[in-house]
Amino acid sequence: MSAFRILGEKAEAATVSPLQASLQEFIRISLDAKQLHWNVRGREFKPLHEQLDALADSARRWSDEVAERIVALGQAADGSAAVVAATNYAAVPGGAIAAQEAVSYVAGSLAEVAKRVRGRLEPVGESDLVSQDLLIGILAELEKHLWMFTVQI
Ligand SMILES: [Fe+2]
Image (cartoon, protein in one colour):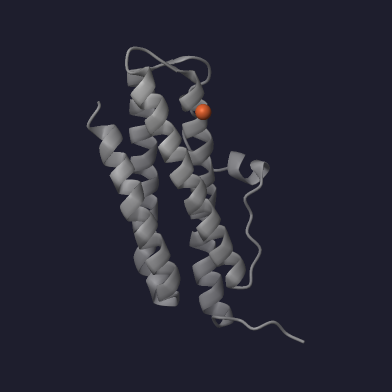
């Protein structure tokens, strides 16, 4: 018995590949946000500690939604640590980190991911409007987080 497929083979491949790239980026954001949540220092510690946790929660939810969309489309989601570590991305600074440095890193990383996700919207929309809608909703939240870090620079 063959499984029901939401999209045709070509549209499925064209949709899953950008979703998979987004999944890796969202996992990365959630891990980096936690790393900074723990290690940030300075007078702004408390609000930043909480803001980073809110970002980690959002990014975890985005990764879950995107992974489950990939599976709903008939493919396997790939969010293993090894795959995420191999993404092309500026590494989060290790060790204790000053508040301003943490804010700059997060703002830069969110801006980069926002740009990449925005660039995927039109091509994904050509193969699957539902996946496009999912990415649009996530991007609106991502850009809101981006704004709230950028204004602190
Ligand atoms: Fe915590």
